[in-house]
Image (cartoon, rainbow, N blue to C red; front, top):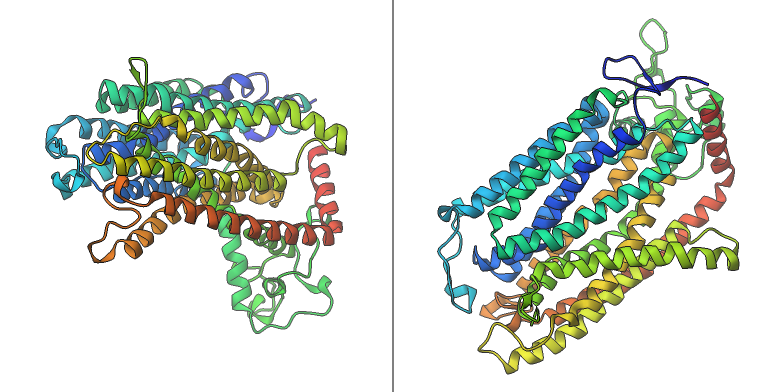
Length: 576
């Protein structure tokens, strides 16, 4: 039995000694970073809309778009963090750098919410249009702090989970089992961080002060960094292997450069430089990419020697890896809309809560803390699935639970039902708002919002685990980081689409001086129509997802021999 890890080194650059590096303790040290990242990002996102409207005096729709743009940018920057970690910095340096950036951002946000010069004067008017809005300088400082936090989040999310798994040796059965346990604990840590953010942190922001809440985020990230650095000499480090994005660009570049080349009738004539055991066999789909593997005269030098420029000639296996990624795209595209519905839970749903009765005895529930029901729904749905549905499904069907695509389908359906429930509840809330137009606090309990939080939250529990499993298991082995980044872009694009949809609806329904569906005051708008539109789009998207899933499954079945080869390759690599 080897005492070192073949593909990892220690702090000094020597082969990592299993007895002195890696394992549960170093992996756990990185989890503190993830808790603080969730604490900062979600603690800001779920309550930011109330600050933008109540303190900065921005209109309702504008406030919602600021939040969704912030969240969308955070997840989009995961691609940048992943690229830097894979190609240049490594995961350890990436985590250290971007955690420091996020700490700086939360510190600046705490300062901006504390200084009176960085916010407009208080206003007691019931209409936000009667208040002085924040000027460009005040909004500039706010945006700078928010997007520093977004940059930090992007770097962290693409590296923390991977760095944690780097502490385990996949070729050691004992450590491989420990790695499986790490994934479940990682998701638990995310949930704990989010729960703390939407309860404790939001309460501190509302009752003690925004600057205190954001200051706690900054201080906790500093403490997490100190803990993270304390394990420097005990970590295992993986060498930079190059970015899959570059590999994809090479295939596209090579295929485009040889678009006039003719494909040989015998696929064995296509270029391949990998040993047989590591090859992915050729498939007939997306034949235009096969031209990247056609050997032409340009691949030989003037003296007749063969030279394989990766930007002009790619092996078949590299081309097939790109084909595999393309097959994921229809599923990828039909999961974006879920995160648009998710965005409403931390924007308009929180604004709804601010207008409703939120007291229990003498205690007033912070509007942002309503998302605790969202997090609770995730934990409950996953617990029910794990403890009850999986055993029953195994007994009935003989299978260990639903497939990843079935989990995604359940999540999409629940989110569509959540938007339908939200539209129905908003109809009732607006009817009461018309009867009490002179007050900002309506005599309707905030618990009417629980169904929409619970349905969309349960949907996230299923779709998040299903998406992550799908993109990791169905992608080529050399592109796992790329596929994880592809998964995270669905979150980013979902938030950006929410911003775009809000702007389009506001422009289409609010022209000519009309209030529109999404005006300055949600009590005078038609948020129910907007929710109804999202529900309709969600059900249409659900149908498109079912078609995409059927197409993907049919293509996978047709290519069963190739799938079998890939499995054999994995077995060979694990035995080496």
